[in-house]
Length: 436
Ligand SMILES: [Zn+2]
Figure 1 (cartoon, rainbow, N blue to C red):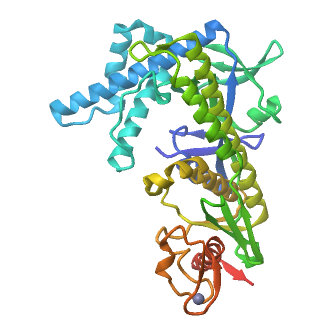
Figure 2 (cartoon, protein in one colour; figure 1 turned 180 degrees about the vertical axis):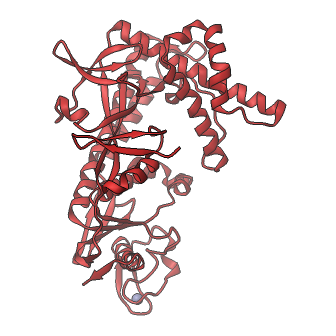
Figure 3 (cartoon, rainbow, N blue to C red; figure 1 turned 60 degrees about the horizontal axis):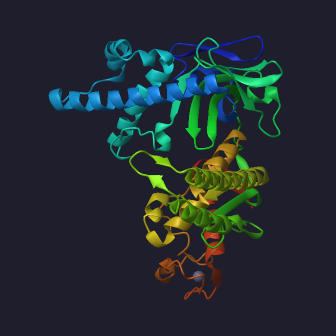
């Protein structure tokens, strides 16, 4: 069923049809108004009371239960019939039965249980596309088994003020107070014209967090048809430096923040301390000192992660604001992580999420984000004469002299320059004029 959009008086849009699931279909419906869907997320730290905390934990457990049930039923159904037990059929036929058999499932809202089934189906589809391994059972002892997602309908999820405190209204849990994020006011969380799509609740060792998925219709950004090469930047992501950002007029290297190593060291020390404390592997319980040490590890991990995210956000914002086109390599990150010597460093710098941020910020502003082919030999090509030097494949070669034209290259800067030229070529292919 096609999605149709109706413009409301306040400038927002109302969709009809199977509108909640498909951004693509909404964009088609919005194109006649010159708008597109912009989606984003907000993370909130919840401060539930005991009853609310219990209700949320119950729903997390229920989602895990339904997920594992569906996964096992789907597997055995396939064994018997060689056919797929579709999520739609399971929801209609088996879910009501399960609810009768296990009354605690009635403590969950309908969408949370259905979402658990859909997640399994999504995991299977990813598996069939060879993107992930075969879907696993959710476990209480892993982060993936400690979350649930519920969908928005008729105001079941809302951000409200309750006796002077900002609260998140959630099905079956009521109004749960949350910490107002820094630099945000109450109305910033769900700005006018935006709508909540869904909410994921996650439990980890430090507490409960809610992630709201939001969307709004914004004016379609216009991509310029001509731009100057001076408005272009290219980045070569590296290990020695985080990125070498190269423009027409020079190069700027952005170092890896000092805290990467500092926290790795501190984390290692805390983990060692934790391993010395008493812990029962079978019962999954530890001594009081074990619990204390565990909290310290968890805190350090969170600190590390949020520092990295902050660094990525600030740098990606700076890049998106200072250029009109950005070129960077399509890194084979998964392949590189398999290299044991590099894997720890690579996982801790996190280029993948950083580049997603840059892409997102550029495209929302009507700017080009370009990724040359993975096999484009950016670091081995001489940026002056185009000679491909096979000796440079070795990552330890930092500086080299071109045997043909004699130019001396810094590895990262040379790669950045090549990416810049490749970006110009890609823009021309797209019909964009690049002036000097
Ligand atoms: Zn050369």
